[in-house]
Image 1 (cartoon, one colour):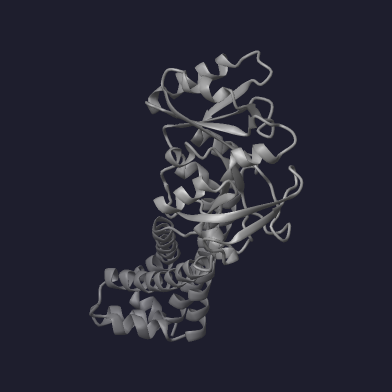
Image 2 (cartoon, rainbow, N blue to C red):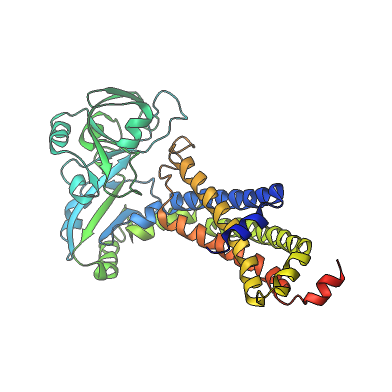
Length: 379
């Protein structure tokens, strides 16, 4: 800190150039933050998947149902401790653009299977007592300004007609990445009203006693229903969630490519800026050496200037990205998890500092090797 005023005066020598360089870091880190948020949204299901949960779907396709009778057969398989089920509804609220997931759930076991979703006991009991009751996530309730007691109409698509529900509870996630945009209602109510596929469910979720025993249980489930009219395909919850991400293509490679191009461009711009700054200050650097400052001091001075620019610009960019995410999902439900974690912020700042170090090292070495006689001769 002893020479802070010297470093600051050098940075403020060309205020516009310094400001533009800081702005370049800010823009790059803002983009990095948004890419991290998007990646987290697509990886959400994978990251929060329970290690002791399996998902059982129809072997043909997840849109094909499974018989309700499979529930008891699944429960009897050694290693299985709990079974629940759900079905996709696919209704429309007011406008088709108001997308959010709607599940008809098993009211007896669903809450116990997913303890990460926190619901007050009183609200859950009200839901159980009302055949037209529903539970909504806190993000969904905030989006549409819903509250407990509201009556919500949904226009059926797959199951036609107008379906009306009473909000009996609002759940929250116990972790920041938990999906709180879901709409749950009772499967028995849906099965009672629909005119086809009675006695069928969309998929089963199974809890096993030992996650290390998942391979054996998966094999036992699928072999138990082999050659039946409704064969099954079972995966761990993590693998099931990852399969949905893979359907979007190699999203990870796309994000890495974009991020790599952005940071490489930032490296070139910052390196060129610092090289120009060093060439403009040859006389001052030569004078510093002539009055007794060492080559190492000059090296550290140039590097410190670059690192300060990287820290200020990177910090500003990550702060802007965090503020942007505080507004919630801007996509209308396509990215329900829109959150920038501290780990991503720390990684972004580390990358900014690394770019600053790499951009400043060559100009700093050039300044360190500068000979006083040669520099003064060019003046």
